[in-house]
Length: 519
Image (tube, rainbow, N blue to C red; front, top):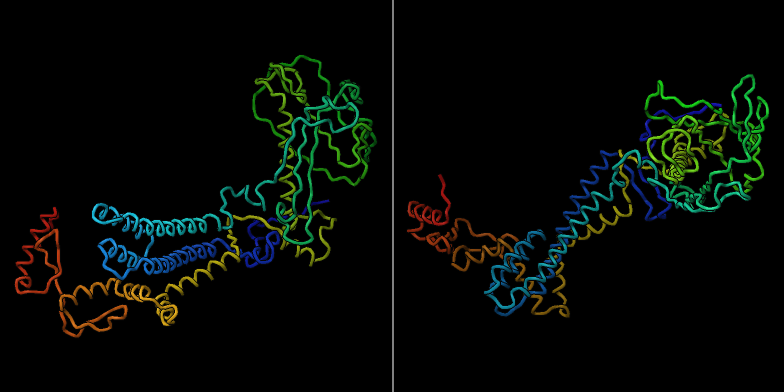
């Protein structure tokens, strides 16, 4: 028998396009997988789209808050400046900063200034934080699960869950275990084919992997015999009989018995190497265990640890590494449980690995892994795995983001027109709403500029009900009087202010007064 292994990179097997994650259902499980370059462009687009959506949502929010806070009566400076910030600040974070400065500036100059500003600050701050959180989520949680360790993030789950009971009973009947308790029971629980193993097809199934392990007694199950054609004594372990093409045997395992005193001559200290051997036998009954080790509802595996070449100096209570010769450090009494748990973890990883390798085309010659090409393709296209070179997006989430974002953008673009349409209905119209609408229209930056010049009698203005008011050809507007650096005013141009030298001298004086010098 021989093995057929895929030699191409595993990332080349990743399917790119739309597919259904059946563990989440048809709608929520709709998924889009893209390569890293295309996925990066999608992420960049989503970040920009979310930012634009946030600005649109903030515009709708400030429009509604502006209308609610609008008042027909005489108001103080806090009211007008708060309304001006709401009208013209397009970013929620900047609005928070401006409102905080406004609150500080008017803290002792207006009644209830904090109570009138704080609610607006909280609203703007909440929107700003929500946008930051949503952007972070898109960057860090919708990247097809950001890969931090490529080796450990290949399978559908980085690791399979399991529980460990280190005070379990003996797994066998009788008294063959060294201890009735203090053994180890490892249990994965029910592993779901879609959730844990990543097999994205029906019918779904569950499997459970249990390992119950205990050190066995050797007294009464060992004999010392002489090796054939040799004077070397061997200790054999009679836990069963073996059957094979080279003959039958009455023991399963044997080690040489050493009687000489160990010597350090020629020894070197170094690392040890463990090699795993895979055996595929055509004999269904190659080993027949003794009755004490038979489990009709389980597969029994015997692991032998040969410590004959290990030297000890400290006493050990570990049942698998009994005191023999010389060792450097004390071995904990539960070290064998640690080692057995490591082997169990490896078996769980092997289950995950075989699911992926099976889908990639791993095969044993002479075996049938799937019935026909159609079934093979179905299995190949139904195995979920992770890849650091690809991104997977929830199509459901993308759809919600695009639909909600587009709706908010359209609403914010026409919010003023929609509000004007709302005011056409007599039953919905009120003096407060009408005033708030015109106050909003007149509160834009360009309209406030128009009002400042128009109140000085400057300019013949048209299109005053539109976004950009304009004057007649040749009209000139007001200028700033900077003679008082701490109280700059807009005034009607005069001959004195029109003199360049006078204005320059005045500006130089005021700039120096502010500590600003142009060298």
